Length: 73
Image (tube, rainbow, N blue to C red; front, side):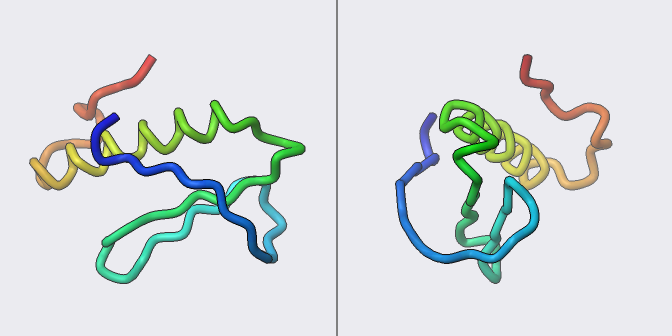
């Protein structure tokens, strides 16, 4: 998907959730950190792509009802 850059990184993050979404100030980038024992890489990629699509649609038409956003199957 154009505009999605998925990179493997290592670091220490303390979270009680198996999936953490981090958004930079100003929405310049977002990052998904996940527990590989709970969520597989392909699922995270699908979530990232769906979130990217949703955010693009909201940015293009901010007054549009959420119920009208594209649903990914």
